[in-house]
Image (cartoon, rainbow, N blue to C red; front, side, top):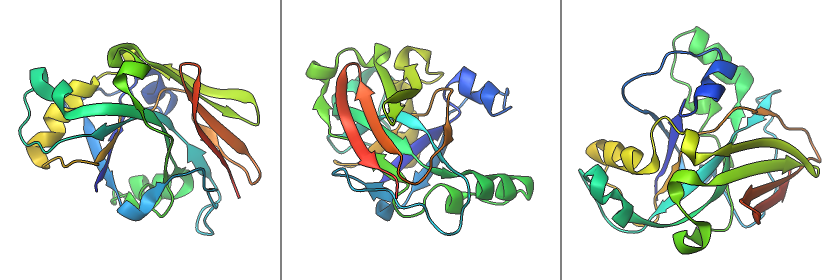
Length: 204
């Protein structure tokens, strides 16, 4: 099982991060299989970072084997979606980026890919216009809609499959909108797709 993530896929978030350049191709990075955090288990803030940020995203689960998938056929390769959190050690990422070094350690560490309960697309609705949000301690912290993606889901799948064979069970984190921020010990995070709560866990 691979965890494939997309960076800089929402204009407002790019501006928030002071990255206003929009490339012609998606920005792709990977997370380790040990990054996966599921079943409502708590996220433990690691001792190597003082600045862990949440990034709320729509997550797609691949349902069949595929390679070099044409964009017009990409919809055949997924059937379920959910809400997830791409946790980032922001202090480490800044340091690595400044030095021009790879930044996997800030993104792919254990537990850094929280994922909610998957639901079918029939339940979720039109993937090109899904709203999702994160609440922290009952207060809205971040929200977005897939209609604002620079690279829609089907285009992402087509692009990624040029480089990696997609297998059943692979997860694609499709990028985060504006409103990312830092988590603290004892925070309670809940993620919603529309009005459905699919993600519920605590920070420890």
